[in-house]
Length: 384
Length: 164
Ligand code: SF4
Ligand code: SF4
Image (cartoon, rainbow over the protein chains, first blue to last red):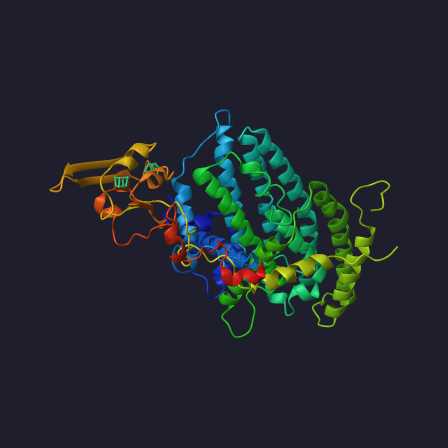
């Protein structure tokens, strides 16, 4: 009989819990595996739900001055309770399942879209050694792998609804997410090359210079890719609130719709957190406590996303795909090559200040140069 | 072949939007700012003057909805005493025919527009309610009231006018 959690761990083959070994040794974390696991699981779920509410409020309050209006201001001070009111409203709504829907798939899709977000949060360090498994040695690979599950969830939602519009929306979403995942992955590989580690904690520790400065090209590519992955403006043509209805989650209502909403904003959190971790030096910063720095950077990145939403128009589907395959992918490969050469040149220690201006110049030259060759379609072009 | 500058327009757009964020916001409305409605508004209530009304019930005959109720009794000078004067504002279509029909100019439109109630029963305005002190009379079909009423404000407040 197994009676204690300790016994379970000792009976597991070492390879199963090896990745979890590190947080046990580091100073802050709770010394017991299950206590650590329980604490951080609950913590992450609470954190994500809270920050989702914070993001919804922040987005609506932040976009309103740009549109010369006030934003939610009725529920609580500064409308702070508006997300709560929305959540209550959406939970009380009727849950409609289409008659001919694939009931099981229809039911699982909203779960499958939200769970990867929580999973990805397991490896995000919010402080030195604080996180569920912040020092997982394949951290960023784990993030990219788990992040891909969302693509399947999107397709499940479209398929399970048994609605031609939702499946069309789902197919477009999947095409877009798959296309933009590649330049994003290449941008991440550039970071990994410079730091020499896949662990997110290791990546933050290696950033004596924020990589947004050291690897501006990778940063820009990753940011654009994140916008596409989140289906935010200018890549929100699948949702397009002002034109079509909702894309793949058109047949969802009530709590299931709320799960999609959660997944969407959870995705925004995780992408902001990843950009913070990979390119903005994570929890590092002067004067303020590390966790506060992390939150400030998180909200700053999301603020940038909202700012873009308030400004830019939406792209067409052909522009979207051309941009991914003909602009971002070649650039990301070239960028990877350049970073690799730099790493070889500096014999593995490429985090130096005087690479910053060089890389910024290279970035500008590449962006401008490739834009000159960029064509929307193949074949002869009519001069416009 | 010339080099295309990338994203200059997009960046300019970002800063234009940011400049907007520092401007005064033009939507600051209902509970904080209240509109002054048109002087001849046909708003959401009727106002009745008990001193002028003779109880002739012309208004009742004029009402296409049949929702005015007037009950009278004979007074000491062989005149009518109005015992009941009711308007069901839930059914009233605010057509104004009663106001136009009244030969003694005892019936007016009110100027208030916050007349929502929690139940239909509360919408029935009786004698006291229709002649209450808080009622403002609209100049609809009563042109002599027109000059004393405040000027109408637009939805977008006047102090922001130069922006538009
Ligand atoms: S406004 Fe029209 S509907 Fe209303 S009470 Fe007068 S006559 Fe009847
Ligand atoms: S028409 Fe005028 S005077 Fe006659 S009952 Fe109606 S309000 Fe009174």
